[in-house]
Structures are given as C-alpha cells and as structure tokens.
Length: 327
Image 1 (cartoon, rainbow, N blue to C red):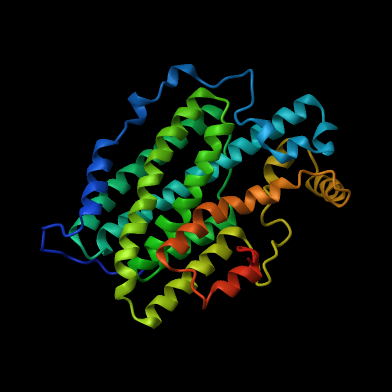
Image 2 (spheres, one colour):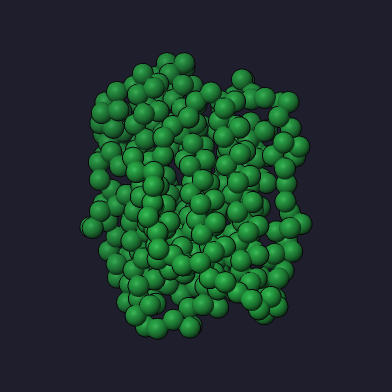
C-alpha cells in the first residue's frame, strides 16, 4: 500500500486580514464555540456493553436473511461485531485522510477567512482520529482501509487545485460521512458510541457547510474549462469511492468486506451464493439497495447539485452509472 502521496498544490499567502465573507465568519465562530475534548467530554467509564450488539442488527439487511438466521447464535454475534468494527475502522481511516487534506486546504485556499476556518477543521479531524482510535482500541478489533476509500482519498490529496480538494473532501466524503453518522445515531446500541457519533456528526455538518459556501462563491469565477475539470473530478471521485467500473456495476468483491466474514468463520463465497439465491427468489429486503442509493443521493449527490457540479454535460454519466434515476 502506497503511504507517500506526491502533491503540487501551492501554498498561498494572504496579507489582507479583513474578512469579506459573513457566512464564513459565522461558521468560524460556530466552529470555535463547538469544540469538544475526547478525554473529558466522553464518558469512557461506561466501557462497551456486552449485552447487546454495537450496531442494531435490525437495521442490517443481512440480519434479516435466511442465511444469517441459519447461523449459530455465536457466529451471528461474531459477524455483527466484526462488521461494526470494520465500519468504524473505515471511519477512522477516513478521518485521517480528512486531517491530511484539511492541512493542505489551510495552505491553498486563497482567502484569510477560509484559512482560519480550515484550521478549525484540522483540529476537528485530529479529534475524530483520536476518538475512533480510542473506541476501536476498546473493541480490540480493527480492519485495514478499503481500496475504494484509499483510492478516493489519494486522489483528493494529490489533486493540484484547492477547489478539487474541497469538492472531494468537504462536499463528497464529508457529505457521505454526515449521512452515515445520522444513520448510525439510530443504529448505535452502545451509549459511548452514540455519544461519539452525536458529537462527530455535529462537526461534519460544519465541514459540509464550508464546502458549500466556499464553492458557491468560487465556481462563478472559474473558466468553462476549469469548471469542466472540476465536474469530471467529482464524477471520477464518486466512481472510486463506490468501486464502480465504467458501466456502473460494482466489481465482484470490491464492495463487500470479506475479512469480517472470514473472521466469523464463514466462507465468503458460500455466503455470497446463498444471498444471491435469496435475492433471485425475492427473499431479501428490497429496500436495502434503495437505502444505499439514498445515502449517496440524499447527501453527496444532492450537495454536488447544490454547488452546481451535476450539470447537463455530466448528468448522463450519473444516470448511466446508476447514481441518479431518470425522472
């Protein structure tokens, strides 16, 4: 796995220290007001509940399948615990990627108020790395970053322009994180995790707001060629994040986390075949795919549309890849 990312994004000085953006002024004040401390603002004395799942299995389509119900109770519990650890591990890795990217944004954004706000996000992301690492240490189980997440973070970190970094991180990755955390607020069974997610999701909402404010101000100043580059970058980042190939399908094995399955003593191929058969027979929850699409559509793609990056030029690509539905 490549750990060193080459980047040529420039560092920009700004000697006009007067803010000209009231919206960013307000967001900066809110960021300062809403800082929290992992050590003192989370009650770590509770530990982790041993009498329930970390995440409610009722919210997991797999737990409603006949295959899952055929497993022993211990295997069911192990699989749910492993999948929860896998999900939280991806949050941890994503937060480190956000930390690295926001450090670049402090350098690269051209206005002083953007630099000041981006500095608060660096602190936020450092706190998120700290809190998810501490919680995973309590779980005593973690997993490596997925290729899709690593690829999109590498693309954002190596982007040459701050606008692309802001689109990739603050509009796309942070929007997806915000939606995921809101879902997790419902599914989290452990009180410590629920409090972590509540505080973290409050930060994520500010991060998305920064991307929207900054890009809505910036996009009208771009040339047609620069805007097209940004539109293409957003679509490419979306395909990397979802692991989709050129015709919109998800390659076999890309989207599925196999290691948590193996660690539960289950053959991933056997599980995949059983679930595929259930889908063919109509026994699987048909709403799961809808919920998955909704997470992208209601958060990430909606915000891309909001800043004007899903134009008539690129909309056919979104439709063909299945990211949007024809109206």
